[in-house]
Image 1 (tube, rainbow, N blue to C red):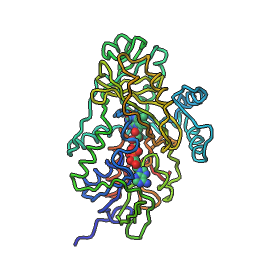
Image 2 (cartoon, protein in one colour; image 1 turned 90 degrees about the vertical axis):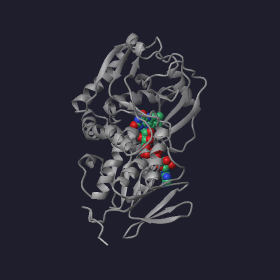
Image 3 (tube, rainbow, N blue to C red; image 1 turned 45 degrees about the horizontal axis):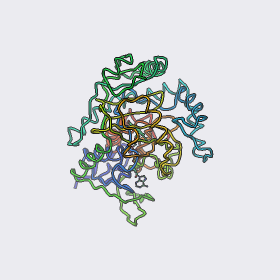
Image 4 (cartoon, rainbow, N blue to C red; image 1 turned 180 degrees about the vertical axis):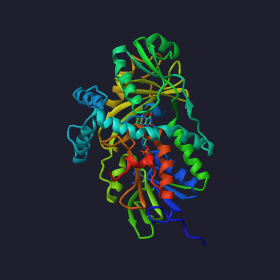
Length: 424
Ligand SMILES: Cc1cc2nc3c(=O)[nH]c(=O)nc-3n(C[C@H](O)[C@H](O)[C@H](O)COP(=O)(O)OP(=O)(O)OC[C@H]3O[C@@H](n4cnc5c(N)ncnc54)[C@H](O)[C@@H]3O)c2cc1C
């Protein structure tokens, strides 16, 4: 039998890999590992899309996938914390990890740090949509929708200035994003679901959106069709290196040995990754969503940046999402946040039945203090991290899986992943 090819890290290329976490990131990694002929088993303590990959806004928006820490967010965040109806919630008592996160976030909220982080995101943003196309061409049976009317809408032209300035910075970082500046009338002509309160808008071009829950289930189906196993009700509690592989232990009592393991556990990444030397905190930035009937379903996403409310057409309903709540990912859904989003959206949407909400949901953006994901080998050459994408794990899930799978199988250094080294 031919010897297994040896990767640059000196270990044989993995043939059997366990991926922990069946969200967008874990399933994308499993799918792209299969492209290299690797046998995959995906373990999730609940099931497919049980975490933040379900009720999010589903935007595939590389043109605005920017790092979260930036001077304006910090200024806004500090102001917002003092107001009870604000879209940002910080608990009155905080644990040491959260304080470390806030200290790091504050340190990175400078223009200089933002530019550096943005420069790191551009090369992966540029590959993000084509990575979705590879999934489509490889048999993932869920559409990505091109949108001609991705609208950011404001009450006044003055409010719009922040995003126009941000787009200038995005351009100077080398990220392309085409846009049009519109009056309220022009925006309403494109999107009749905007109310008369809207006085200014920006139309973003060439972005896409998906129904994230349906998409991630289609991705899981494709992984299964290609021979992968997906185990629900499998809570990974320990990983032990054996010298020739990694033993994966679950709370349900199973133990199985794999050549390598990928941790793609979203907002819970720290729990297992810390044991392998990953010191970066992954903090849950919780967001809420629900869906409503609308007289006119928009053709594409509608964003109210001043209120931090994101709306996306999901079938014949509109998903309305928002909030940034810094609490434990497993804390219960808090109805006050749903009400805050409802009242923020009410004056801005026309014909939306906001009092008959369905699918009320809370999920956790896995946020890092420097605004960059954690992708690559840990202290162990057999245990990899894939997560911490914050606001952009849907947009960047497939490109993450694609590049990480290549790195794992070839052992080559992938230049686009260098800034995301989990051991940084
Ligand atoms: C309101 C809101 C709107 C958003 N909108 C967008 C958007 O428009 N575009 C975008 O790109 N991103 C968006 N995001 C961010 C995006 O949802 C996340 O970045 C992304 O879903 C993260 O995917 P993931 O696979 O890393 O994590 P998850 O989807 O959370 O998957 C992690 C999985 O790991 C499992 N797990 C955890 N611990 C264990 C364990 N020990 N053993 C086994 N399984 C375990 C969990 O059950 C879960 O299924 C939004 C987020 C929110 C909250």
